[in-house]
Length: 158
Image 1: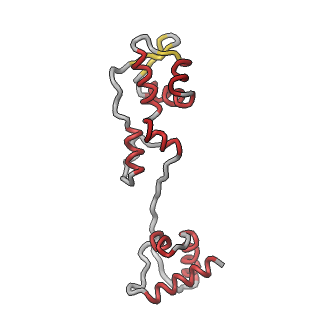
Image 2 (image 1 turned 45 degrees about the vertical axis):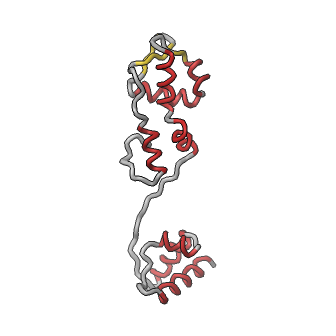
Image 3 (image 1 turned 60 degrees about the vertical axis):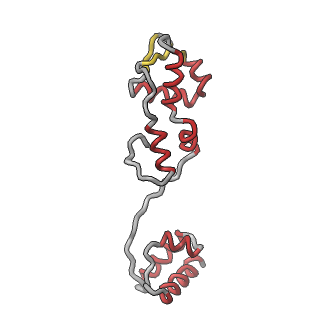
């Protein structure tokens, strides 16, 4: 039984360690080559039996999706759309041409975000620029920071 094995490992470690403490079960589980879930289960079981005391530590981990990885590589959808609209000039670009250039999903997501940010507008059937230059890609920057393990204040990340 995994919990029993993890319990024995924990008790053995606590009996032989100089500090009789496991400061962080996540780090300890990785070092001990035991799944963190098994260690947490064993700790809870040992708590019930009053063999140990514990303080709960909560940590959040972020893992990028394939879409997030793509944005790090190519930039956000709204920046891709804005670049195409700006390249098309004052007359703008039709939705079909935009979809051909950036792909249907990128066009759909990017167009919505560009309209919301008031970077582009509609002139008849075409999308036209309302700004002269491409702004900083805050979404890409935030995802790069997350990927590098930096704290991000959440701005631009959903």
